[in-house]
Length: 287
Image (tube, rainbow, N blue to C red; front, side, top):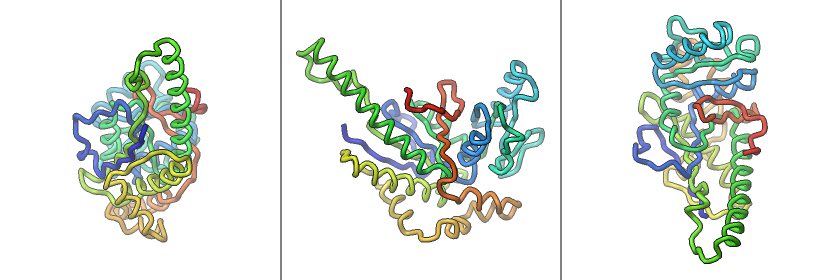
């Protein structure tokens, strides 16, 4: 089955009626939500529930604290880059130390990233991606595709044995045919850093797919993001001049920009669980 690679430059460009049932969705919010999710999981967070609104996040925190205990649940997030009053942590990945998050459940609501995650809820597989885990995510995707292909082959063989007269097995196989990157953007606008990160993922994925002799196509947005990434010689230097990086610097988060601009600092693959929480699936190919 041909595989299509697509990039949505903002979540708002994803039409509500888009069929994501055969898609893998990578949500990207470099500054800072998806970098924070990967960092928190690397430092021992048990699970992270993303919510688009502060009210939803606060309600979930109350519910889980009632069941798990006050100390085991952290309410986290930001609006306009600033931690809301009464929250335990903001959206700086550097806050999420092992001392703060190890073994705990996190509830996260941010200005852009958790909104983008909400747009992807219909997809069977959702991954939080950032510069920190580009290589890990691409390697996982390739292994996932190979495993899916092998299972599809087994299903086809079994179907042929039991129903040899059936000619079209595509409905039975229901395989992945699209990988979407959804850039969180900034308040509905294009975001340089998220688009650049999607380009890094498309570039790495293209190399793996071509090497594996997959039949693959790219949307114009995916091709543009890839070209943009390939044009950048010094990633960190380019990123610090983006609009959102300059805003974060103006409110005291220059170090977050530096932290979030580093490539391949973790092997963590944050996968969305059926109940919406992100976890690091320690054996992600046992699907």
